[in-house]
Length: 232
Image: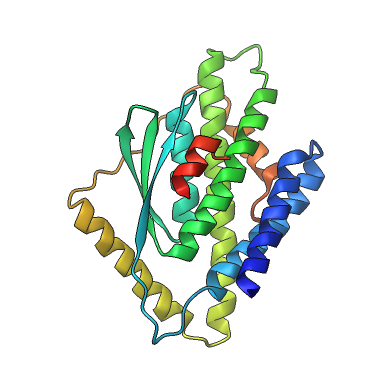
């Protein structure tokens, strides 16, 4: 019950962040949501004697900007201790296969759903500068900058929660290491060969996307509805 109450508080904070046009309010809501979410990830760890098996979900991100949406979903999942793999285009869009334990998959779902909505609304307000070589290239680099900063801030929030738990002497570090290894084994069973890729950017929108992500502010933390249904 306590975990469900925490998640409900997170959902309400994320909903407020999605609705407001005030960047300071959005930052406040997202900071509170990210802190609660990171702490929930630690509190949801089962007792040492209890064993869980990693699960997996396939998320489909529709056009437009399907690849950039898929990258956001992937990095959000990675930040909250899941293991995502971009598995290419399907009939409905870009697909991401996410592996992880149930509580972390749920955290990835909540955060990615909200952030996709915030990213879309931010992109709608973007006006490429007059000296931009290509408006599309500017927008694409804006999306990548937004995602990279979100990832950095989420990782910082998660690291802080883990550090607090380790300092409390709960054996959290060993539990997390074991769970990460189990997730990697689950991935290897499905995909014995994994190739890494790094997106290339062009245009000048990257730094503006980074700044916009700081307003979403997950550290100090939307999957479009079809993608959200895939996660659930």
